[in-house]
Image (cartoon, rainbow, N blue to C red; front, side, top):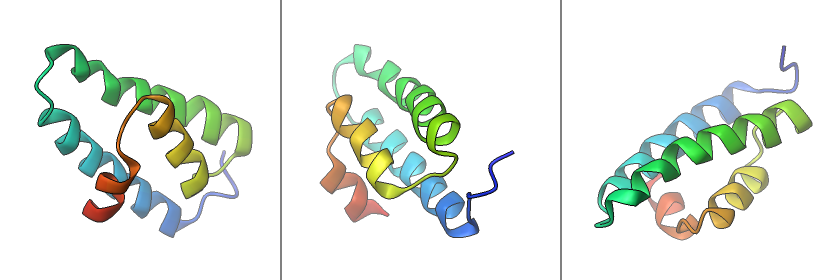
Length: 77
């Protein structure tokens, strides 16, 4: 279904999502909980469906659009 998806992209995305989940969990506002699911939705429809791969640039753009700290998540990865 996603012929351009590599093992490295999949592993990196799994780590990114784990780090993001922890980062969002540390936020104080209870309304921030939806950010993780918004990211999953955005990454699926923008990066996977449109580009057929999970490049870091696309993932970073989705995180920035949601107001998440790309630097903190990259450090975690």
